Image 1 (cartoon, rainbow over the protein chains, first blue to last red):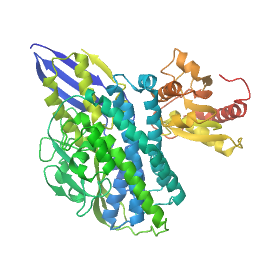
Image 2 (image 1 turned 180 degrees about the vertical axis):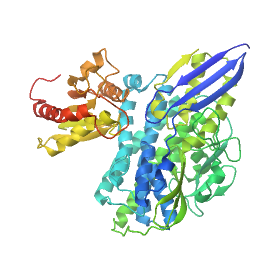
Image 3 (image 1 turned 30 degrees about the vertical axis):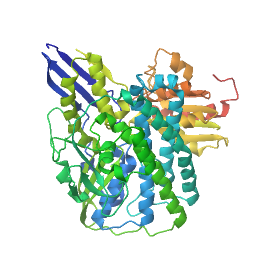
Image 4 (image 1 turned 45 degrees about the vertical axis):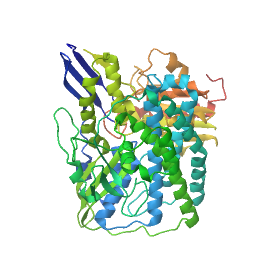
Length: 434
Length: 156
């Protein structure tokens, strides 16, 4: 085959970042295929140096407008590990709800606004609203629910206000929690309907398989919780690490043509995110989420990255049921005033939490006055980039017989499946063929 | 329900944040009980639920309108939809326009007034430029007058 292809997909500039998809084929042979991250480095770790312990979580929440709560949580966990602070059970439970809200909101945004148009064969959510109005109305309600869940605990869902080291500056009332619990319960049937709906169009998900390593939190010894907030680092290759050992997993390295680092562990690359969590921990899902997995034909391990969206949908059911149970527990116990004061000290610590796109690491060293000497943050999208490139290298040679438009769409759908932090722009792509 | 007044923009990009600054200044003025002031920041689709739940909406935003820096215009969404300047009317890429378009498809939008202010600079910086600072009270007065009169006359 003597086909020549030159695809360069430019991502439109938006807050969440800039990435380009490149494919060059000469005489029927793939010369280069990659997702290039062209966003300027933002130097957050440098900005943190010299900052006081009480400022850190507020600064790092600005790393992301979608995962602001996740960054704040990874931050307070790293600070607590460094400063020798153990948060109370009440604080941990409330934090789990904050994280649940953010994961719900982000998953719903991705499922309905970014991926559903592909599944229904339209270009964006606007034509989808015309042909499937009910889906879009449901999407807006569900996304709002996720936001409301976070709002009730931390004041707002973007850049949380009350979330702090050791505790909260303001605690939510039991009645506010009960209200949000009622909303969640009311919305569960809508998500179950969505599972049926997505199952009906899942045949349109591209058939592509590449085995890789899956990294996520794993349950701490003796726990039966599907871990988002608490856990060890778990590899599908059968190894676990403590969060403090995250660098043994991430092994960041630099590649040409990209301003973002790449990561690998035991294989050429690894995947983080909903599908990695599902593959590593699906036995710990809530029974209702397991039912959804069955309807969607998802049996771990799933090696098709296009199925990440289905794993996210399964997780939303788990998160909603789990959050209802956590709120039950808090209501039974009542909200107690607790002492959230602490003394800074010198120390080093790491925090790991599961945010929508995968496992997130923060790591800090404090001096004796509680000022940051060193900071390191490794975000999920960074960890997925090498995996996306490896997927591209396996996928591209197998689809060269398709039209340039189809090839471009399949590559873009793959990037979208990972829900990378450039996702806000993914349905506004301009495709330019040379 | 009631009248929602949203200031849109990024306050870290000089004049881009003028809408937020104007709406925040209104917090010092006496307003009718049914008025809700909102810092909309750079929100997109998250605004839609609030917009659809309101009876009337005023949006204050920096807007690229090809007029002199510091000038302001009041217009309705029909002008955005039909106008030749769309989609370059807002500095928020397509987010706000798409949100409004989406709202129009899935529901009946309440009457919406947009007050656009032409920026001088949208570079990094957390203060307005001199031109906009000089006219700032005029913007606040104008939005205040719009709040007081909106709904009392024929709306689009």
